[in-house]
Amino acid sequence: MKNNLVQEFYKFKHQRIPLYGVITLLVLMLYSAFSGTKISKTTIAQGFGVGQWIVLIIITVGSTFFEMEYENNTIVALLYKNSSKVKIYLNKFLVIILYGTALVIIGIVMTFLFKALLVGKQFRWTASYQQTSLLNALLLNLVGIFIYLLFIESLAFLLISWIKNNAAVIGIGLGISFLGASLSSVIMSDFPGLIPLMKWNPFNMIYVMNQLAVPKKFIKISYLTNSQIITCNIIYIIIFMILGYLLFKKRRV
Image (cartoon, rainbow, N blue to C red; front, side, top):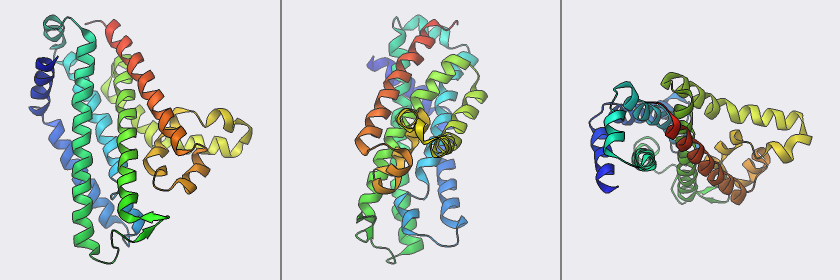
């Protein structure tokens, strides 16, 4: 499996889309820094929007990396060299996980840089923010971002194995990430009787990116405790990975 993983990394790093993803992250973080009238503690705690931008990039890069094997007909050679399809699936999944981790690290570095250059000592890292320090809030948000990164990646792999259309997967993934939570909140607000059931829906999982740092605020929106939303994300990740692999296994070459 080690040799196969090395091959996957080799293919990945020789594509242009990972570099485009990094550039896109930097540009969008700059947009978040300069688009508002004033940089607030919330802007810094959320890493200049790093979470939502990484979600966008992972959906695009992950599904494209997976689907390119079929578009270039290299999947035949890949299956011929590997007797286990599960290894192929897990290797690709791991490559994107590590790429997403790299994006999170870049996001941390850029957040510290932007804060130093644009805010200076106006907001110290030890400053109080929602009953914790600003630094702790940022780190908790990054933990939530990483958890949701796994969620959205497993979903993207499931969708590309099912729909087999990269553009459609990107569109659906972005719709779920940016509109799903709002739709879920509206339904639960208008129909409170559905809350016990609806609070477990996958659209609600995106709140993990912010809820760990500001639980009192987001528990009122997600109706899930921190432990519940983390556990639920993990369960969905496992379900999506299993379903995605089963679809990949049955997919015709």
